[in-house]
Amino acid sequence: MAKKINDIVIVGGGSAGWMTASTIIKLIPDVNVTVIESANIPIVGVGESTVGGIRRWMRMIGVKDHEFIKATDASYKLAIKFNNFLEKGNTWFYPFGDPYIEENIYERNDWFVKKSLYPNTPNYDMTDTYYPQMALVNQNKISINPKIPKFKFFEDTAFHFDATKFGAYLKDYISVPSGVKHIIADVEKVNVADRVVQKLHLSTGAEITADLYIDCTGFKSLLMDKALNEPFVSYENILPNNRAWATRIPYIDKQKELNSVTECTAIDHGWVWNIPLWSRIGTGYVYSDKYISPEESLKEFKQYLTDKGQNVEELEFRDVKMRVGRHKNLWVNNVATIGLSAGFIEPLESTGLVTVYEFAINLCRSIRRKSYSQWDIDEYNKVSIDMFDYWAQFVSMHYALSHRNDNKYWQDITSKSYLNEVNNESLFHKAITQKALDWNLPKDGNGVLCLSAGMNWHPMDNILINGFNIDQETKIWFKNCIDNLNARKQTWNNAVEDELSLHDFLYKNFYKN
Image 1 (cartoon, rainbow, N blue to C red):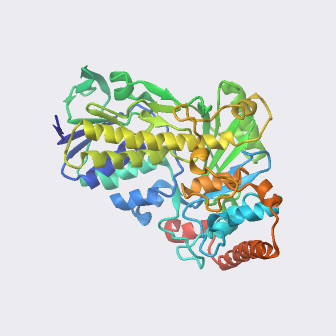
Image 2: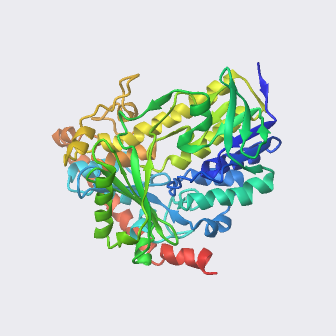
Image 3: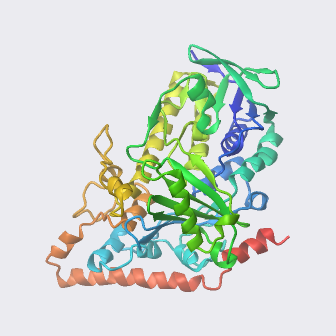
């Protein structure tokens, strides 16, 4: 039987709660939305990095750059940088937007020809020759209309911002002005019958009922886990990290350090993130407590920061325990879950906030008729879970393709089987089924393209290529292919030399006054 929806209650504020509230009130404005937010629960607040898809969601709910950047201490992001994941000294990038392949001879495969014929070509050269905006990244520049092809500023950029301030911005400038009701209280008791939430008892003495409850209570998962006891599916078998030390550090050289990349650097027992906001840098060490104790990992992290010139005695460190995986179902009866309460894939690739707005959009699709049936519940679960599992496997490939052998942590990571237990298939085996002779790398996502090149796992088999009896005409084709890549990289670099630095652009347009 279809159930009518007039009243929606979101339990939990923070970035997840207010992103969800903003999405629903903008896409389905004729429902009643209430956010119940505790004044006593600290916000995790490490999700300060976003990816390009957030632009679409921001347009959807009406967020404008000039309105929120200063309010959230934000800066622009063009790419993700990975250091030392394949091996120490290896660096590669994942820029946003689509690659420039219009002049390529073999579509997306031109660079792999270059790499096969010249194996010493650095892996980051692929993005330098495929993504024009890498000229901006490499020179730490930014421009709305740079003289380079393909790059679209309002689509191919994302943000670094303070997630706590972003939640507050959405509350004050989007949600509440649009009609969302805000209650500050603790949920002290949840009445449940037959796995259906009947009522919420608040610390104020009030009792709240709704047609649909949305759990945005973080890792606590008050409704889906504590009240409904929905099983949890762990990703521990492919994603080993379960903790993080987080801190905030000051700039030493702001012009240089305020750049447009989220930097991820693999170290002894995990990896360190570096996220430059306008006023400071967010950083943290993601690790597994099965291989190193919290005390030893903090010591390791402090040494890393000391080597970067930071005075660690002046910093505050927070130990964050991560529940990596997802609930078996993300919508059960009259409870849906979004954000950390639904699941988490560790911070690599910045998927935390992606799951929030993508799942909120999926939920709006399911309830846009202002009622829902089991079909709508099943559809939401199918779409969201498939998306979540794909991202989890994509992130896991950063470890699966590593060839580091430093210690037991890396030895175990590179000894795991990353095949899907259901269909015995990995993300790469699904995306790329023919390595040797297929000149057309399947367009299953630019992340796969960048990860493949960055981790030296190529869709073209250089052994077979080098074994071909290549005639003179083919040699000329190959030379033209490589010459074209090298020439356009130089052209793009020259084109952005006179653009403003990221620091100066932000200061001039947002932070001057």
